[in-house]
Image 1 (spheres, one colour):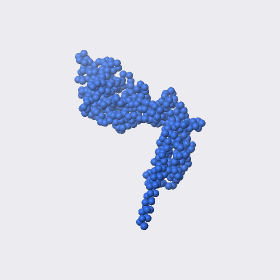
Image 2: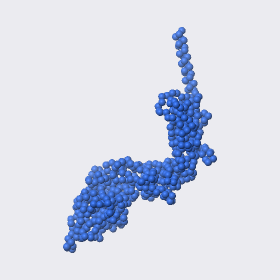
Image 3: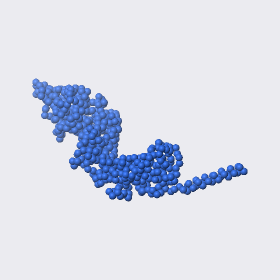
Image 4: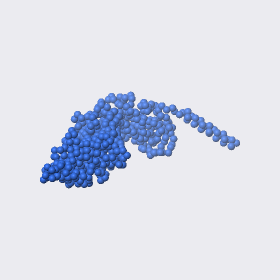
Length: 550
């Protein structure tokens, strides 16, 4: 499987790769199979081509850290080269999966005699492992560092030992410990020209992360309507999202927050955030998890939803995108606060799911052909309408309207499948969903009407206009605080069966209405008091003038 170690190349020059200099300078050069070919019986440590070996990796303390947390660091070992003794000396040959790669042209793994050569070869082989997805049997081994000692031991399948060859060691998860560079280790190697070592110990150095970032993951629900993806709402659903270090979802991020649950309740999407992630140049990948905590593969083949699968997991929200069938690759080194979207595409909606419709409600308050501002609060109820045209007694939703503006409300399509045509009636109500009493309401209401939604038409519009009556209410001129918009109650997408056909006047005065809302106490006593005060004040002025004239 493809995977990447957690390291950045910009730090590579500062990292050590092997336990001792003798390993760096002597491990990979061609060495005779016998110390003295002319007299093998006198060799104290003859090469044993059948011997098994092991690799022990000991993580070192990071000097810049007060306490180094090595627990949980995951290391993966790849066998990248076999050993050959055809010419009576040891040499290494790349495994079949790697030997013909153009990216490795010019890389001589038998001429690694310096630390810099080891570093360059290891980085090239890391990229090659990514390119091929090296997964052959007895080729890949993964160990997790446990405890404070920071030791991981690779002893092969069933701990019977590793075959001889050259191995690439990669860190395959992010961890509070820090990052180590990839390194190459050979089994066996010779230290002094006469002794072969089959059990190898390596002590790579690590450096701490410079900064931390975050990944915000959006989970979106879609319904596949003959290739058109429609937004889908779930009444109550939860999904687990996992953070991984490889594009196949095999190696998970080792932090405690590697797994997050996103809940979608009464909407078509929601987000979760993975925080405090080490920022490196190596990518993270996000996957939805199944009930066993395993990564669900991505696919852009939406026909899967018609082949008995409950849903298809797709990257992003566009099935035609080139990377829709691949795990989102997120590199925090270029964007420390990144985001990704995972869509579940359904062919048949489960119970409690329905295709999302949207009704946009426009509210205008008018007086004498002019749009006016109002301190009143208005509401609209969304009522279902049955096949016989009967309107439900109670609304499915009550929406607070935006005076002289719009608001959009999400509603479900009809039927038990949540995909059938449905008609909604939109009417002005009070905040509790009770229809207004138009006989006492100080406004004339027009524009209420029905909206029919289907999978071919998932949006609709209703324009409700409240016009102030000639003798009702009270208003006064005030300086305009906003650019008055022209009222166009009759506009829309043709999906409103009873919208009014008004037009704006040429004036642009802004008036503040003081009319009473439905159910409010009319302030008649206040007005009477103000009128009485004005009469008394007028009487005082008349008396004073008469006295002066007298």
